[in-house]
Length: 84
Ligand SMILES: [Zn+2]
Image 1 (cartoon, rainbow, N blue to C red):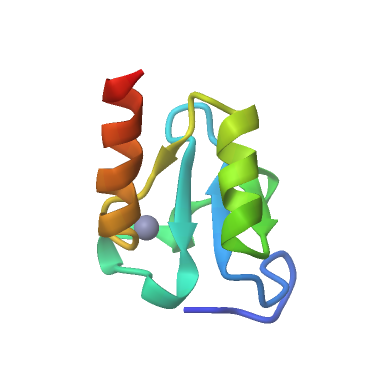
Image 2: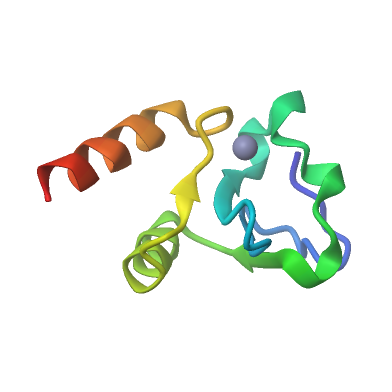
C-alpha cells in the first residue's frame, strides 16, 4: 500500500537497500510476502516513477525486481539479463 508518511512520502516504488535483499517493490501491489514492514528505514529508498526505477536499475545492476508485487516486470527484467 502507498503510505504518505516519512520515509515513504507517498511514492509508489521502494528500493530495499539491504545488501542481503537489494530488491525493488511496487507499493500499490504490495503482497504479504514482500515483507515491507520488515524493511528498516536506513534501507528504504523511495522512487517516484517507473522510468526512474529503470534508471536506478541501470545504475545498480545487482538489484532485483520483486516477483511478488511486479511479476510481469520481474519476468521481463530477468529475460533481459539472460540475453546479455
Ligand atoms: Zn514486493
